[in-house]
Image 1 (cartoon, one colour):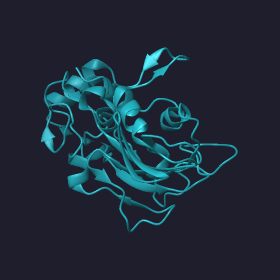
Image 2 (tube, helix red, strand yellow):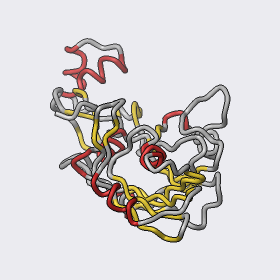
Image 3 (cartoon, rainbow, N blue to C red):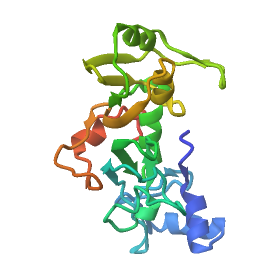
Length: 241
Protein backbone atom coordinates (compact mmCIF):
# COMPACT_ATOMS: atom_id res chain seq x y z
CA UNK A 1 0.00 0.00 0.00
CA UNK A 2 1.56 3.35 -1.01
CA UNK A 3 2.57 5.27 2.08
CA UNK A 4 1.36 8.60 0.69
CA UNK A 5 -2.27 7.48 0.45
CA UNK A 6 -5.05 7.46 3.01
CA UNK A 7 -8.62 6.20 3.33
CA UNK A 8 -11.38 8.37 1.93
CA UNK A 9 -13.41 8.26 5.16
CA UNK A 10 -10.43 9.47 7.21
CA UNK A 11 -9.94 12.41 4.85
CA UNK A 12 -13.63 13.35 5.01
CA UNK A 13 -13.75 13.12 8.80
CA UNK A 14 -10.76 15.41 9.12
CA UNK A 15 -11.84 17.93 6.49
CA UNK A 16 -15.52 18.14 7.43
CA UNK A 17 -15.26 17.35 11.17
CA UNK A 18 -17.75 14.50 10.82
CA UNK A 19 -18.12 11.16 12.52
CA UNK A 20 -18.02 7.86 10.71
CA UNK A 21 -21.80 7.58 10.48
CA UNK A 22 -22.12 11.01 8.85
CA UNK A 23 -19.45 10.09 6.31
CA UNK A 24 -21.27 6.87 5.47
CA UNK A 25 -24.47 8.82 4.87
CA UNK A 26 -22.72 11.18 2.45
CA UNK A 27 -21.43 8.21 0.51
CA UNK A 28 -24.84 6.49 0.52
CA UNK A 29 -26.48 9.64 -0.87
CA UNK A 30 -23.99 9.84 -3.77
CA UNK A 31 -22.70 13.19 -2.54
CA UNK A 32 -18.97 12.41 -2.73
CA UNK A 33 -16.91 12.45 -5.93
CA UNK A 34 -13.33 11.28 -6.30
CA UNK A 35 -11.72 12.28 -9.57
CA UNK A 36 -15.17 13.03 -11.05
CA UNK A 37 -16.56 9.59 -10.14
CA UNK A 38 -19.23 9.04 -7.46
CA UNK A 39 -17.58 7.31 -4.50
CA UNK A 40 -19.31 4.64 -2.40
CA UNK A 41 -16.46 2.82 -0.67
CA UNK A 42 -15.35 4.55 2.52
CA UNK A 43 -12.11 2.54 2.44
CA UNK A 44 -11.16 3.84 -1.01
CA UNK A 45 -7.54 4.99 -1.13
CA UNK A 46 -6.88 8.59 -2.15
CA UNK A 47 -3.70 10.65 -2.42
CA UNK A 48 -2.54 14.26 -2.46
CA UNK A 49 -3.64 14.66 -6.08
CA UNK A 50 -7.07 13.04 -5.85
CA UNK A 51 -9.80 15.59 -6.67
CA UNK A 52 -12.38 15.42 -3.87
CA UNK A 53 -15.80 17.09 -4.18
CA UNK A 54 -18.58 16.87 -1.57
CA UNK A 55 -22.03 18.27 -2.32
CA UNK A 56 -20.55 20.36 -5.11
CA UNK A 57 -17.83 21.86 -2.88
CA UNK A 58 -14.20 21.18 -3.82
CA UNK A 59 -12.27 19.91 -0.80
CA UNK A 60 -9.06 19.08 -2.64
CA UNK A 61 -7.85 19.80 -6.16
CA UNK A 62 -4.07 19.67 -6.03
CA UNK A 63 -2.18 19.14 -9.25
CA UNK A 64 1.31 17.69 -9.60
CA UNK A 65 3.93 20.18 -10.74
CA UNK A 66 7.42 19.60 -12.09
CA UNK A 67 10.14 22.12 -12.92
CA UNK A 68 13.72 22.20 -14.13
CA UNK A 69 16.03 25.03 -13.10
CA UNK A 70 19.49 26.03 -14.24
CA UNK A 71 21.16 26.53 -10.86
CA UNK A 72 23.74 29.32 -10.72
CA UNK A 73 26.87 29.35 -8.58
CA UNK A 74 26.28 30.56 -5.01
CA UNK A 75 22.66 29.41 -4.77
CA UNK A 76 21.89 26.75 -2.19
CA UNK A 77 19.88 23.61 -2.96
CA UNK A 78 17.30 24.14 -0.25
CA UNK A 79 13.82 25.54 0.20
CA UNK A 80 14.86 27.94 2.98
CA UNK A 81 18.27 29.30 3.97
CA UNK A 82 19.24 32.18 6.23
CA UNK A 83 22.51 33.04 4.45
CA UNK A 84 22.14 32.31 0.76
CA UNK A 85 19.46 32.57 -1.93
CA UNK A 86 17.79 29.21 -2.59
CA UNK A 87 16.71 27.51 -5.79
CA UNK A 88 13.08 27.97 -4.68
CA UNK A 89 13.67 31.73 -4.37
CA UNK A 90 14.49 31.79 -8.09
CA UNK A 91 11.15 30.31 -9.16
CA UNK A 92 8.47 32.65 -10.42
CA UNK A 93 5.45 30.53 -9.59
CA UNK A 94 2.67 30.41 -7.04
CA UNK A 95 2.61 27.94 -4.14
CA UNK A 96 6.31 27.26 -4.55
CA UNK A 97 6.50 26.53 -0.83
CA UNK A 98 4.93 23.13 -1.64
CA UNK A 99 7.86 22.13 -3.85
CA UNK A 100 10.83 20.03 -2.84
CA UNK A 101 14.13 19.33 -4.58
CA UNK A 102 14.80 16.12 -6.49
CA UNK A 103 18.59 15.92 -6.68
CA UNK A 104 20.63 18.56 -4.88
CA UNK A 105 23.82 20.31 -5.93
CA UNK A 106 26.56 21.85 -3.81
CA UNK A 107 26.56 25.62 -3.24
CA UNK A 108 29.18 26.27 -5.94
CA UNK A 109 28.03 23.57 -8.39
CA UNK A 110 25.77 24.60 -11.27
CA UNK A 111 23.29 23.13 -13.70
CA UNK A 112 20.20 20.98 -13.67
CA UNK A 113 17.97 20.98 -10.59
CA UNK A 114 14.52 19.36 -10.54
CA UNK A 115 11.72 20.53 -8.26
CA UNK A 116 8.28 18.98 -7.72
CA UNK A 117 5.42 18.58 -5.27
CA UNK A 118 5.03 14.91 -6.26
CA UNK A 119 6.90 12.81 -3.69
CA UNK A 120 6.14 9.55 -5.55
CA UNK A 121 7.88 10.93 -8.65
CA UNK A 122 10.95 12.22 -6.81
CA UNK A 123 11.27 8.97 -4.84
CA UNK A 124 11.16 6.97 -8.08
CA UNK A 125 13.82 9.25 -9.53
CA UNK A 126 16.10 8.57 -6.56
CA UNK A 127 15.32 4.86 -6.16
CA UNK A 128 18.50 2.74 -6.52
CA UNK A 129 16.59 0.15 -8.52
CA UNK A 130 15.94 2.62 -11.32
CA UNK A 131 19.68 3.32 -11.67
CA UNK A 132 19.14 6.85 -12.95
CA UNK A 133 22.43 8.22 -14.28
CA UNK A 134 23.39 11.86 -13.79
CA UNK A 135 25.83 13.50 -16.19
CA UNK A 136 28.29 16.16 -14.99
CA UNK A 137 30.80 18.30 -16.85
CA UNK A 138 33.87 18.79 -14.66
CA UNK A 139 36.81 21.16 -14.98
CA UNK A 140 39.98 20.21 -13.04
CA UNK A 141 43.04 22.10 -11.87
CA UNK A 142 45.51 19.43 -13.08
CA UNK A 143 45.76 17.32 -16.25
CA UNK A 144 43.77 14.09 -16.62
CA UNK A 145 45.00 10.69 -17.83
CA UNK A 146 43.73 7.14 -18.33
CA UNK A 147 44.23 6.26 -14.66
CA UNK A 148 41.14 8.32 -13.79
CA UNK A 149 38.95 6.28 -16.12
CA UNK A 150 39.95 2.98 -14.50
CA UNK A 151 39.68 4.30 -10.92
CA UNK A 152 36.19 5.70 -11.44
CA UNK A 153 35.04 2.48 -13.13
CA UNK A 154 36.38 0.33 -10.30
CA UNK A 155 34.72 2.34 -7.53
CA UNK A 156 36.43 3.95 -4.57
CA UNK A 157 36.35 3.20 -0.86
CA UNK A 158 35.25 6.11 1.34
CA UNK A 159 36.58 5.20 4.81
CA UNK A 160 34.51 7.78 6.70
CA UNK A 161 31.26 6.06 5.67
CA UNK A 162 33.01 2.69 5.07
CA UNK A 163 31.40 2.37 1.64
CA UNK A 164 32.57 1.64 -1.88
CA UNK A 165 31.15 3.84 -4.61
CA UNK A 166 29.32 2.24 -7.48
CA UNK A 167 31.19 2.07 -10.80
CA UNK A 168 31.15 5.48 -12.51
CA UNK A 169 31.91 6.32 -16.13
CA UNK A 170 34.48 9.01 -16.84
CA UNK A 171 35.23 10.35 -20.30
CA UNK A 172 38.18 12.68 -20.85
CA UNK A 173 37.07 15.62 -23.01
CA UNK A 174 40.30 17.62 -22.92
CA UNK A 175 43.41 17.94 -20.76
CA UNK A 176 41.51 19.56 -17.88
CA UNK A 177 37.89 18.60 -18.60
CA UNK A 178 35.89 15.41 -18.17
CA UNK A 179 32.36 14.06 -18.32
CA UNK A 180 31.28 11.94 -15.37
CA UNK A 181 28.18 9.73 -15.14
CA UNK A 182 27.04 8.75 -11.63
CA UNK A 183 24.17 6.50 -10.56
CA UNK A 184 24.37 7.56 -6.93
CA UNK A 185 24.99 10.78 -5.03
CA UNK A 186 27.25 10.46 -2.01
CA UNK A 187 28.30 13.58 -0.12
CA UNK A 188 30.60 15.69 -2.38
CA UNK A 189 31.21 12.46 -4.29
CA UNK A 190 32.77 13.79 -7.48
CA UNK A 191 35.05 16.22 -5.65
CA UNK A 192 36.15 13.47 -3.27
CA UNK A 193 36.83 11.02 -6.11
CA UNK A 194 39.04 13.53 -7.91
CA UNK A 195 40.55 14.34 -4.53
CA UNK A 196 42.10 10.85 -4.54
CA UNK A 197 44.31 12.17 -7.33
CA UNK A 198 44.92 15.44 -5.48
CA UNK A 199 43.21 17.17 -8.38
CA UNK A 200 40.91 20.01 -7.26
CA UNK A 201 37.59 20.47 -9.05
CA UNK A 202 37.35 24.02 -10.39
CA UNK A 203 33.80 23.74 -11.70
CA UNK A 204 31.04 21.13 -11.61
CA UNK A 205 28.03 21.45 -13.90
CA UNK A 206 25.17 18.93 -14.07
CA UNK A 207 23.83 18.43 -17.59
CA UNK A 208 21.23 15.70 -17.18
CA UNK A 209 19.34 13.45 -14.78
CA UNK A 210 18.27 10.28 -16.53
CA UNK A 211 16.59 11.29 -19.80
CA UNK A 212 15.90 14.83 -18.59
CA UNK A 213 18.42 17.22 -20.15
CA UNK A 214 19.07 20.77 -19.00
CA UNK A 215 17.35 23.04 -21.52
CA UNK A 216 20.11 25.02 -23.31
CA UNK A 217 17.68 27.94 -23.61
CA UNK A 218 17.64 28.40 -19.82
CA UNK A 219 20.08 31.01 -18.58
CA UNK A 220 21.50 30.56 -15.06
CA UNK A 221 18.69 31.20 -12.59
CA UNK A 222 15.91 30.51 -15.10
CA UNK A 223 13.38 27.67 -14.86
CA UNK A 224 10.58 26.06 -16.86
CA UNK A 225 7.95 23.39 -16.37
CA UNK A 226 8.85 19.88 -17.48
CA UNK A 227 7.22 18.50 -20.59
CA UNK A 228 4.93 15.47 -20.44
CA UNK A 229 7.66 13.36 -22.04
CA UNK A 230 10.22 14.45 -19.46
CA UNK A 231 7.87 13.66 -16.58
CA UNK A 232 7.03 10.24 -18.00
CA UNK A 233 10.69 9.38 -18.53
CA UNK A 234 10.92 8.58 -14.80
CA UNK A 235 10.07 4.96 -14.13
CA UNK A 236 7.14 5.25 -11.72
CA UNK A 237 5.81 2.26 -9.73
CA UNK A 238 2.86 0.46 -11.28
CA UNK A 239 -0.39 2.30 -10.56
CA UNK A 240 1.32 5.45 -9.30
CA UNK A 241 0.01 7.57 -12.15
